[in-house]
Image (cartoon, rainbow, N blue to C red):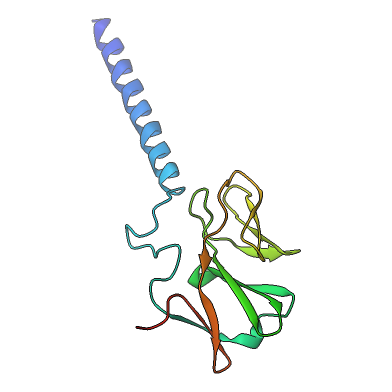
Length: 146
């Protein structure tokens, strides 16, 4: 009968290993780089997006539109540049701007909000640029309507 407890122990060890592997899979899924599967939106807009009043972006500063996954900078009055706010490392959306740097809350990557360039990894690719323009006092991001 000693074989019975050994078999049970083997089954329990296998179940624990499976549970650990499943937990790891769920953890890794949180770092997914998917940009348009599973209901997530793409890293850059595929249609025009109204961001609201252009004067909400301070001259010499930037504004994070987290819900739209965009960062807009205003280097000079009436001039705007925009970038995806989705980290190029693992797809997380940047959570704040501090001292001209966009912060990724997942792994600590930092980006220059005026250029999109990586300032600190683990990200190695710059934030993708996004077309942006002021129309009638509002900022519109993404491609122009056809």
